[in-house]
Image (cartoon, rainbow, N blue to C red):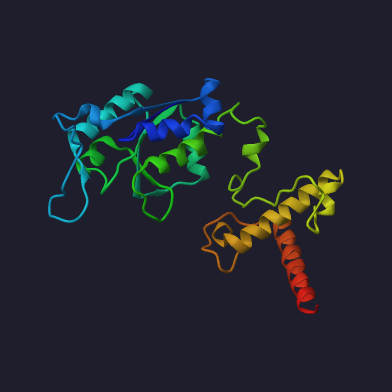
Length: 262
């Protein structure tokens, strides 16, 4: 996969891309991430890439000529049909489904603007899609771009040591992850759940699914159609999940009653 990032701070991007999963993916030739700096295409001695907005107001806006040329150059690195994606607070909410959609492509361009964003004419003419990683404002799109790159690259075949890692993670099945434990068995009076210490794989699968559904119900009810406080937009519970959720809630209530009676 080839990814090109249009950014005013290529050093910031490249430093982060050298480490962890992203660094290993590039070292193995599974992904290649390059950066294009719009300043390279600025037509004046000061390498100006932004200006004050028409109509007044605070902040600066990315000017069309250098940004448009940088986006064209980035697309030239990736491929003529590569989607051009602008990281913007006005974009669609980025999620696991979008990460998998992008992971199935040969490559894409990410545009990390700053300040008040880009001149709308650049967005209209050079951007195919806008994405947001959350309902908050960042100083620039670089960190958002890194989030997207990390979420996508780790889904590529061969990037993770165990392919099950990406298949069993949070949001892959529309559910939060279950709790994880490792050695030692006992730590500060807290023990690893007995079910995880045995070799009954069916019991372990059932426990993990119950914890995942229960956590999702409590923390992200919007992911469940069936949750009374949810938005009804998530995936419906299966019969097994519904039964396990009832068990989870009953156990939680029993535990709470036990603590109150102490």
